[in-house]
Image (cartoon, rainbow, N blue to C red; front, side, top):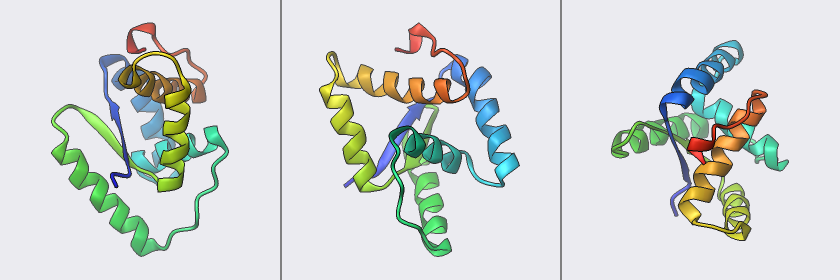
Length: 123
């Protein structure tokens, strides 16, 4: 089962949100993926099972490998299977196209976390 969420890096995302994610990652001494994962988990109130340092390193390696296999400029975030199920159950309950709902929901979570309105062109 693929346990990755893929976030497309649009021009607006790169100039507005990516800088904030990078600043937060530097302040917390974490990676972009760690920061995004924590934001996504917090939005749903999901509490992950604690992971060992070996598991964290393995996840970072798999995220880098998955990021290289994606052809577009994207961020890949490895998530728990249980969280991914919750995420997609929510996406499936929304009216409209699945791909559009997927992008919209991910962007809304990230933009709203930083107190910004998600641009309508990303919906």
